[in-house]
Amino acid sequence: MKHILAVAFLGIAFSHTLLAPNAPALVALHTQSAKGISQHYDYQALALLRRFCPALRVHSLSQGTVMEATSEFVFVVTTDGMRWQEVFSGADPAVVETLDANTQAYCQQKYGAGDPEARRKKLMPFFWTILQQNAQIYGNRNFGNNMNVDNSMWFSYPGYNELFSGKADDRHIWSNSKKHNPNTNVFEFLNKQAGLQGKVAAFGSWDAFPYILNEERAGFMVNAGFEPRLDGPIDQEQLRLNSLQQITPATLHAGVRPDSLTWAFAKKYVNLAHPRVLFIGYGETDEYAHQGNYPAYLDAAHQFDAFLADLWRMIQQDPMYRGKTTLLITTDHGRGFKSNWKNHLPLLDGSNAIWCAVAGPGIKARGEIKSGMQLWQKQVAQTIAHCLGLKFQCAHTVAPAIREIFE
Image 1 (cartoon, rainbow, N blue to C red):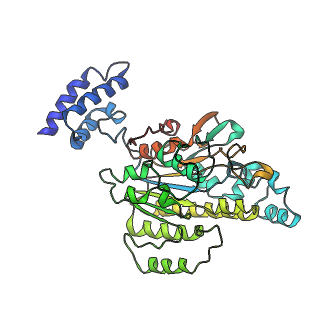
Image 2 (cartoon, one colour; image 1 turned 60 degrees about the vertical axis):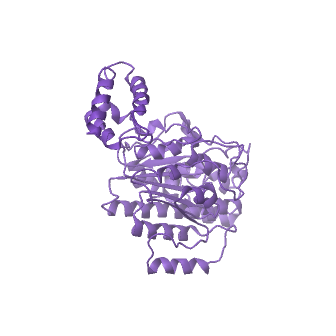
Image 3 (cartoon, rainbow, N blue to C red; image 1 turned 120 degrees about the vertical axis):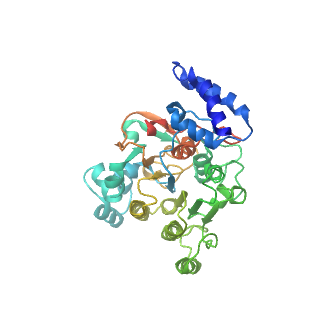
């Protein structure tokens, strides 16, 4: 009965509003008034309203909901510090020519080609075939299609904070030190929403992710570094993976496990638990770049592409995920040009330049976006929530979603 009354009340309130030229603004105003009916939002009444009132598919009553969801599942994947130059043009001739003869020969033999589009396809064959045919890809600055970080640090922790909290925070996040992030992240928010509790998980190569995502406060599983997975469903293969990583040498920076293990852990969890929201953060691109090892950096990018292809196959072959999952791919920061490619620092030109790709139901497959625009890293958090039909709200102001994706 209360649901019917709610529908009746709001139907009257919206009756003159929906035909007005400024309908969205009036809907928002009435929405705020309607919230006074109860301190607890009536999701069943909301569902009825959304069914019979098309305007509410864009403007809704619920604290979390802003539109009809495009997806039931969202997978977010990052590879640390991968430059836009390699994403859009493959192996960079300006970097290759600075290498010794043997290293140049290796890069040319494995990833070389006569033009940027051919080179990028050799480096990331899945990304530039199947994904491109199904996605929107942003960040090719050669066409004035710019995507930047908004923080002033231009390195990892500030980048991931901005990416997932929806705001830059130079005041509190100005180093890569392992301190618990004071800012609420979108995964933390999603884990508190109806139907998503306990269905959010994160896997990362870098052992700072439990601090960046504030696992203690957020309440969802963050498995990173060389941490064994003991939470959630466990089978014999997972136990073997736990044992394997304990004897795997830390050949990268201390606290960074090989990306292949991170993918193995994430893949096993997807098969066992079927999360609705998943984050996977790879790290080898950044690790080898800091070493100045350009061939290994390219190999890591090539391997990252293979992980994406494997994830894509899993999504398409699983009836639970197929046709219902958004895949969002991006990075935390850029890097310098030419001889400075290995570094990323405040004020080092190029370090604030990033990119992203997104594919999923309700998202038009436009491939590489070549129109001029300016996007920001801080918009990704709300974009993630938007795909699930939710509005990410917390104590701090969250940047709006990337609206171009949904047009």
